Length: 421
Image (cartoon, helix red, strand yellow):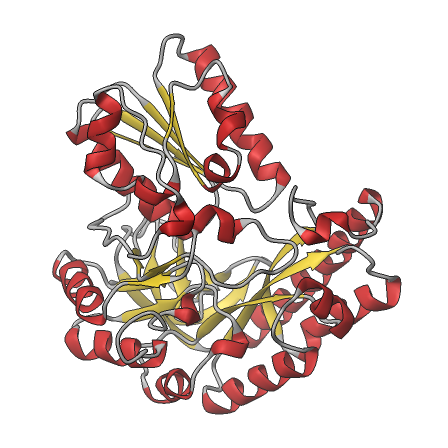
């Protein structure tokens, strides 16, 4: 959860980086249309827990700030609109279709309630967000929505069909961000590797990456957010091999390492596909670091199936894990499958996280003695090009520093000497 307070508008954002970018766009739109003093809650629907936290936050805000106008948006507000609208603390519910558009916020101020159908959305809305409070890196939203129907996921119903920003719009936004002083841009979306499929001539993500880098020679780093290994195109692999400024870090939407579970999830890759992809990319870019999303305790998962996912961590050489115990989402096919007991899900998630911690420790050990370049963030921490966290005490956020790795504390690297900007 991230909170942003500027120009008398508080925004509480749950979930993904795309939500974070949209939250800043909503703050600006709300401020421009007379919603001073309002609190905007931008929800997430990935898990039942994320929805529960959003409801809890809404009630807390109402208790702590009686009389505050609370406006709820985001994926959970889209998929569970009636439930949020029925909360006495909520003044308005604004769906995902137009939540970043100033016209929708003007309509709210005039007492109207836009209720566009997200499944009819056909155009990606450019988000002119130059800077996000509390963040050093720039996030550039290039795609929205998803055309896939994984059996555990409600996000396609909260985000609508896949739609892409045209390459020229993306390149222009990237140039603006670099001109504004950003050293690193992170490309974000719901299904990033589907970018371009709905555009004329169906360009691919690798082509977009090349165009951005050509148009921003002063950009130090371009980073990709979560992507689907089965959709990675040849031009993207070539860019990873040849473009030094494309960060050597990929976060993969893998979800499981057992073929039957992947089939029941309706994923489009197999276990062998995932391992093969990591091997190919590592041969092209030896310094690559892989992260991944993994679900523990998917319906029908046996101990042997769970072990296959656990072994995927070493088989793919994963370093940074996002592990989620399976969360049943109403109206999804997986919610109707035979469920794994919640304590078993939690225990399997614990095993995966422990394996992930050990993998991270091994990765940190391998960095000792290397010279790295770090983009300093807030809170005395920075990120190396491969997204490894690095302690940066006393260094101003936004600085790019270099130094030799002297050690680590199990979570982040430590440089050998006080770094110089």
